[in-house]
Length: 337
Image (cartoon, rainbow, N blue to C red; front, side, top):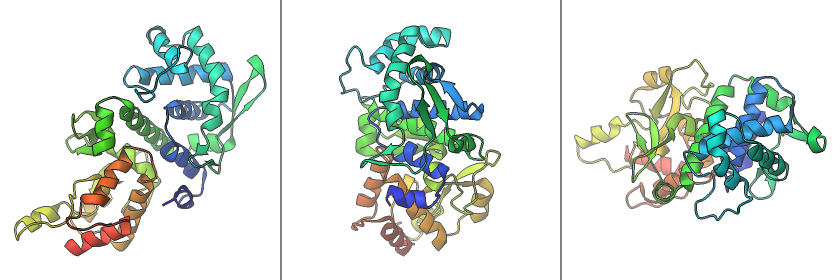
């Protein structure tokens, strides 16, 4: 699935936003700090924000993450004037007051227009998302970030809370992949799901990275895999085993289950708790399998490490078989049932 195919499933500002957040290149985490600030100002209905005010929210959000995980690959050498170097040096004073220091704010105002604000809408391959969410107007101290009607509508939409959660989850995943040790584990070995907490962890250290629902719902366009309705803010959400996990136990009683691990990411999908309860242990419908194949193909378009997890499933989860696509993989699982 290409980015164009993903967008075609929801040809809207939401689709463009998810393209930028979930499928854009991630050499650093600046786009997530920018996206968080955009949603926050949009939710307050502010159409025009002085660049300095916008940069304050942006840099504060980045510093809060910087104290937990690196915001660029640790192998990357940062110069003294690099924005991340300044952010690290000013983080303690910034967090103590709850406001960026003058030096940090000046660095953000100086770097944002020529760095993250030029790149947020860009995708890999020199393409851009169909919708834009802001523009920079004015010059010098009078520069203003103007939010577009698409961003304002998005920030007040039914899925706004979900979009913010998806962005936060993606930020957590990317920054963790930058960290030494755990990042290498995530990129080389993929992720593990802790069923006690529904958290994604790395396989080696079992350190929590982010929530499974938040990390995957965006690749389903924020919709239940079973009924295809929106996963609303007030809805109870469960994680569905699309092929029921009970199959593995059922086959244990008559021999051995010859299919792949059904407790893995490829088979797990956010769904309404009521839909999941009604579905129970039935096998997936053809429509549900098509949705799962599309969801997994979309994840394969995102940078590490969720993509790596699914690559490993395609490569080795079916004993003695090699498949190259998710429809083919799911047909093979059906044959094992």
